[in-house]
Figure 1 (spheres, helix red, strand yellow):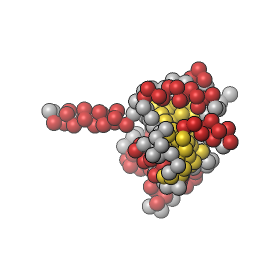
Figure 2 (cartoon, one colour; figure 1 turned 180 degrees about the vertical axis):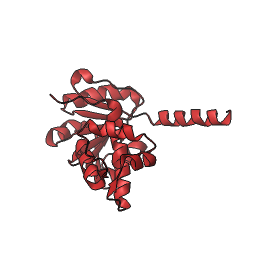
Figure 3 (tube, one colour; figure 1 turned 60 degrees about the vertical axis):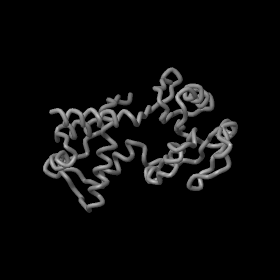
Figure 4 (cartoon, helix red, strand yellow; figure 1 turned 90 degrees about the vertical axis):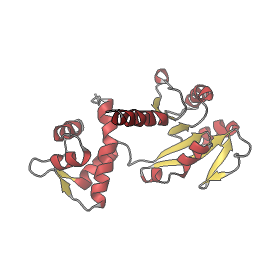
Length: 211
């Protein structure tokens, strides 16, 4: 039976991966949990607890081998595999996702965009084709798609998401302004609300201004 890892731990894993990548770029070969905690502004015990969920990887008095830990966390996050993505909604946000080349470094490959706008259909974004939404079924049936990103109006998101589920898509990266819940369909959903982080930033600005 696979051990269930808390979502809080999972949310911290990409941050570990990012910091370890920066250490590799700086040619750091080994680091202690204490030094890593200073860089990341989390406690050393938190780091050890998080990594112990997956087996530990550190040695007392030696610390962590940066390259080894980076590779292990990459495998834990599934970054040693290729994940094919389609984007439904080829407006500004959809095009911005397609133009972000760093996704490919982590194995996330956007293969196609879909839209209903005749001015966008038939165009390309960084050599990635934009198809009409009427081609979605055929494309999903003929290509292996792991993730569908939704960058469309919220009133369309639920219907499109359920249709994608019917087409066999197992994961939804949702940027529409609505929280999708497809647990009953055994589909993984990551709801992303960009404005939420701005609101948190605004709150902290106000707190600082009036403190």
